[in-house]
Length: 224
Image 1: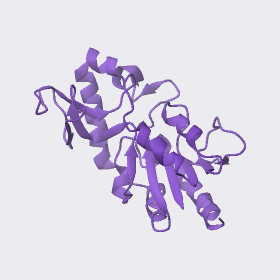
Image 2: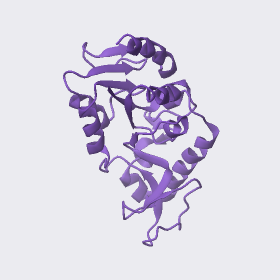
Image 3: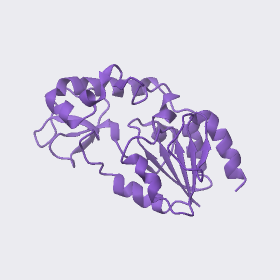
């Protein structure tokens, strides 16, 4: 059985990682478009580099939580692919093997001119740190105003899913939220999130946070 999981900020929030968007539209007291758009980067690269340097440092102070580890355990019984909107590496650290990062990865850097020049990166990216093509390194993050290069891969996985599990996402960030539209009519869709979601009554909604909701999910999967 093929299980595809779409995860968002809610699954990492329980590990202590700030959610992408607060109610006031700010992220860590910054206007989102200042720090998460290509226009913001071109306008003030120093600010954006510093913002992601702080996000990268935060990764070393957090650990995967029960929901991350549960998704790893699913691999013991099912063919599992995780599609994540998160830029952290908590799924990897929990041991999951098949992960598609829609919005990039904090622990990678890339040339700001050549998408193919990507490097593993755990330290700060400083102005003057260059890729091998001589151009400035930037976070390997997909910002507003940029294409989502892994979207086609994600769609291919959803098309093959017997079960689609959505955890910790408001389903308001596109194109990621549109992935549900690609699920077959035979695909069972389960959403775990404490908030109201823009979904129809055919989709099972477990209205709990990630670590609580997986207990309901375990029971549901055991009864299939």
